[in-house]
Image (cartoon, rainbow, N blue to C red):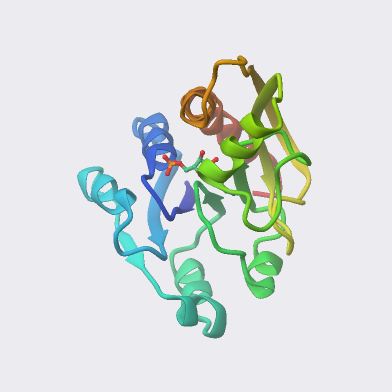
Length: 191
Ligand code: GAR
């Protein structure tokens, strides 16, 4: 049995798609959903899906071993960042090297880095009059959005598209690809 922990800070639509994808699979479990945001929509989704939720604050995340210990006690094999907006502390990156993946709503290395998340990414893409955008799924290292890329997919950006239109296209790509790319990562021998 492979055990996944999902970290999310917002609505959690990706977390839900991942949970749905693996719901009939006896060999994979979404064991925990963790969030830094007590208002996050992902909390309601997790409750509906009967997945345990852990809410933590900044100090706990950066200055204690509580989250590391919890992941260890729960025998987590893979961490999935699905709209998680905090930088991962070094000690957690090290203990989950090549066992932590993130999704970013742009074609990295474009539109990545600190402050580039969610709607800000789509606004920047529209402002730059890009003809395409897309998604990047990558391993996580100590720096925002710089880990090795596992998968990318693109979509067209029309001249008439606003940031919301781009967001809709990106979410569709994410919901389709992220669960199956996670499935491929789980099949790798080091996990
Ligand atoms: C997703 O589009 C994800 O790519 C993005 O946040 C959104 C979360 O949506 N992540 C980042 O910007 C990380 N830098 P969701 O809460 O509906 O899954």
